[in-house]
Image (tube, rainbow, N blue to C red; front, top):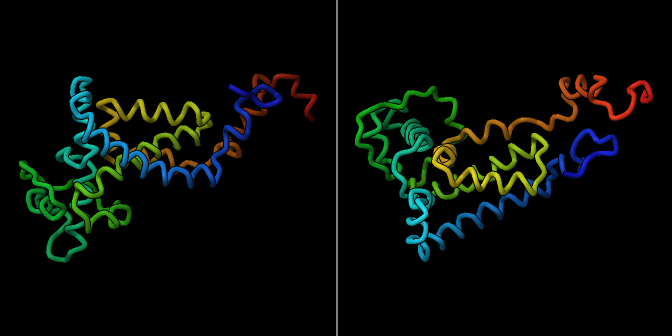
Length: 208
């Protein structure tokens, strides 16, 4: 990994997340959805042999109930005026094209309604692949904001997505939480660390 002149971390061009990089994630999301659709159509048998058929099924919008669907169904129930966000999910699920076998209710407070409102008018199968692709990019950006170089962050995010825990993360909003962190370069913790003698590759007194 390339380091700064003082040898204390990644170069600034690797550590910072530019507007260009953020913008490139938008076509990357579309590309991931397109590639998943092609792979599901032509290579579903190969993915099944690798044990990844569940991943491709979810990416095609057929993955069944997931954490994000609870949130969107509750938001749809709240927005349409005819239901409550806390109606049974057997009632709210069909509003987004998803049937739940369990007669249970949404248990989260309604803080996510502004986030999920853009998804609420659409059926589950329409937006789930786009959401999962966006969460892969969010995982990568989470690492980028923590100064992981891009040539590592994006492949690691894809590798995480191919695991069972990764699938559940993609079907939730959890990857968005670290992505909301600002760059840590001006944080009080970073300033404290940079001022400590152990952080210096040359005597700290020389910087005074």
